[in-house]
Image (cartoon, rainbow, N blue to C red):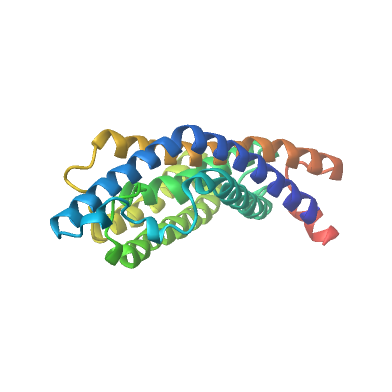
Length: 261
């Protein structure tokens, strides 16, 4: 059963990757192209100020290893499908760990709740502090620092979500579902908010960068993530329910998993 659920998780992830590709190709790539054009204009102006003459005509061409058409086509497709399949496999593993433990709802509801939680924990919260940026935004010298700060925020968010889930499970019998959920929410929010306040803010958006372009890029990024987690939650829930129903145990698969593995 573990293998069946893992395969179905990866299949759901591949489907999510296809949707992400379509979303990114239609709505994301135009903002990337405009950001690259803006960056090229800035680089040309810098070269002109330093008197490099003909070097300003095609700034950055010598550094381009892969063409933009390949990046926006095959490159984007490969990246999002591999990304989707990987997260689909992880999603299936987490589903097997929590289904029947956190609550006794059916597999589709568990998958939907897990997907919503993952979207908030893995994407939304870290990106509220350190949002995605298009080309021309961010200094090359600080990329290591910015990456470390983002993963610090991500790690705290995931760890706090795990602790909150454990707290909720332990308090349901004593406090009831509503109070346990409220306490778990506070358990998650307190360390996350404290971390967001303590970590330094990074703002490297150029003063003359178009605000609308920045908003469009970040909206496209959020849309791709929302599409992925929505597909994972809905599609994997249906596929998992089929497997668990066939196995004869829909609400608590862990006994089946223990026997069959």
